[in-house]
Length: 151
Image (cartoon, rainbow, N blue to C red; front, side, top):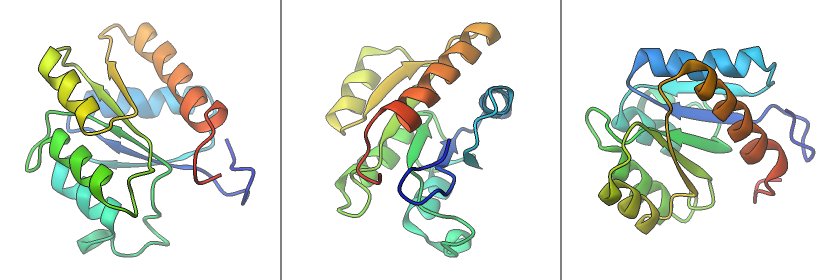
């Protein structure tokens, strides 16, 4: 998918510490020939560094700001809820859509995510075909059909 405004690929930041889950997301995007750039980080601190252009992610040409973030909650170093809170309280990043993509269906996690202004909360199905269908729908909704502030 290409942004109408600048004809550049849309950048997706995948924040996932489970390699198998990250691979499923990437494989699903590849299977559906979705022309987005997926940047993957495996802990909450790397996610914050990437989003705010710090440390090893300070080169914005190499690590452009994401158009959408897929965020797991249970992350090493910095919890996903804290990552979400920081994204949504910063004036420069608060409009970035953040989709919680997690295995947790706990009421508290859902409530906290929306309290911190998550744009969506999705529980990952463990069945690969269902997960793949979910990814296809998710991508088309957030990166093609949904009208975002960066368009």
